[in-house]
Image (cartoon, rainbow, N blue to C red):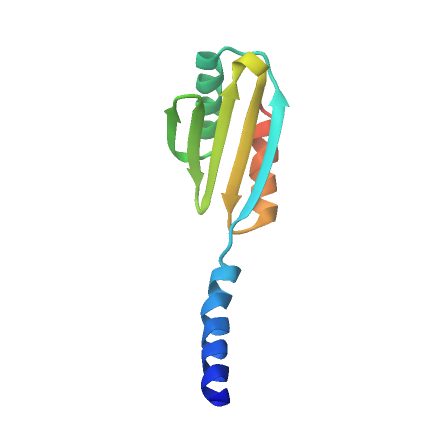
Length: 106
């Protein structure tokens, strides 16, 4: 009985390890900006495209884009005069770099 329990526990540990290793890094930030929604979305779309993001799409108050294995969303909140940014991908360093790249240009 003990060896069967040990085998089950070992199988669960082995199965769980790749899931943990594949967890994405996420970086977030916000910036105070005074822009109406249309201007904000247009500006963010332009910034993403000029910095090499692909599959750039605007939906409601947000703009989404891909950068290789990384995904970015920028949420425009004109009534609070802020934009909220979130980047997710394999490494925290690259998430931070992409976040800083766009923050510096908004």
